[in-house]
Image (cartoon, rainbow over all chains, first blue to last red):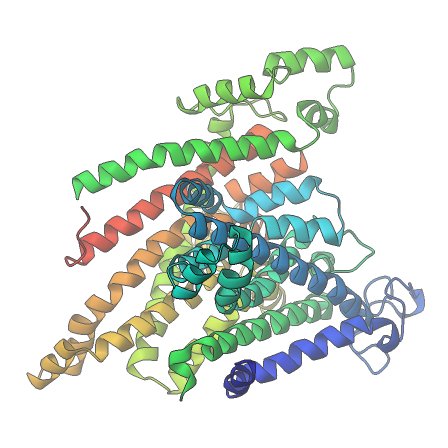
Length: 278
Length: 317
């Protein structure tokens, strides 16, 4: 099954290339202390506001800090938050969707009305309010982004579970006396893995964008710790004279989010049995 | 249909109540308060005055009591008093609403024109240069953070080319319509970009499937010119799902306006929201969040109704 899946995914060339890009960016960010020739907060007043050059691949800012170094370190924070938020949001969404779909009746009614309410509140403004008082750490940023991005997953998973719970193998498990928790975890959820994985992938891209938007407004992780969003906020003031500061961190976001979306598309196609035979 | 609309409107009441409970709970959980807003404004430092102010605003009461009082006011259009300006929130929102609606309206129209052009070209000239361009643009629309697109356009059109103003609604001392429109171009385009991407994809897919339908083959067999086949027979049917998505997205434009207005210093509700967040002005935050949520709820209904009106096969009981 998984081998077949890998082969189906490998046929999606753009998705494979994207996976390579994301892996490369992630490894480069993780290995930032080894790759970067400078410290992310190393101020060098003898080389301020330099355009990209061999010494400073992406130029320097008005404190002489190396931009390439800061993009790498910023990527650590941005990617970590993106990944964590996607795990939290998709996990919560899967749980809500599975419980609602499996137990049905009043549980379903209550959880789905709750989903309707959460879906109706504009996410970004609410996130802005939450981020304005939440501790400015990667963990708390990931938590609030995750807590506000579970609704779509919940609806998808609920739909899947509604079909799965009527299958013979679930019936069999129940007649053998398996507890609800066991049926949900062992029989129902593994069979919804496809849509869950796809929505988790797309959620990473979304969370990276949301995190950068919040950082851009001055919320979330505070300087001097760089994130792609707060670097762009800093770049705004000096954009006319040092455009490279406004370009490279944005390119990093664009590259990662694009790649993550292609991977999501590739996974969706690979998991869709109708499209697999071609 | 009327029965359906009435029933849906009745369902909106508990949904909106649920939304107010969640919003009120979240806002209450946020630390700081009117005193923080006052102290931040540098006007009051005397603790007894702060206490008196708290009593006057009613924030010394238990939370459920505050909620009911707020709700009682809200159903009558009274959203409370701003902590930082001490003016009625509803009045402040109404004052800023026209600028936001103008921006949203311009973005909506622009998105519709661009998306229809790209979507139709993409479907009619599938796999050509036009189609690939459309695909590329729509990938960018999904993966590009709004504020970064704004920065780049400010850099290119404002700083390098000097063609367009990058902030505000008009040049000081200038009152012409042309000047105002020039100020509107960049923010409206930035706000529309995401929807150009989404809608053109929807329209392309929907038009492609319509072009493969039997009635299109019939129309071609009758010898109708291609322009009529595509423009009248296929497009009208292909538009149905797209138009309902567009109605749905109208409310989402409101969320996008928060960032766009902030970057372009556009004096609308979105910018007021960010300012209220920094001054911890909860009644204003609450009022704007409620307005945003109400728009989502209303446009959900509008989208469903539009779908039913455009497609006679859809029957709501």
